Image (cartoon, rainbow, N blue to C red; front, side, top):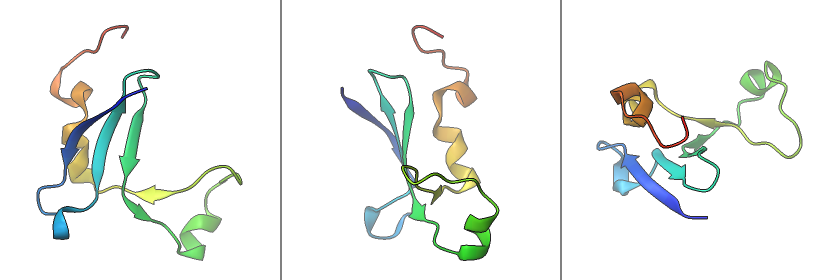
Length: 75
C-alpha cells in the first residue's frame, strides 16, 4: 500500500491539516482533518467503536480528482 499525497490546504497554519491522500491499493481516500469532539455533533451520528470522525472543510473537495474530471484506472 502506498499513500499518495494529493493536496494540503494552502492556508493551513504551520503547514498542517487538512490534507487529502489516495490509497493506491484500495482506491480509497484518506483524510487528515480536525478531530470532531463536540458531543452534540457526535450524538447525531451513528459512529461505531472502530470509527473516528474528522472535519474537512468544503473548500478541500476541489482536490479530489473526480471533481476535476480526472478518472482513475478501474473507475
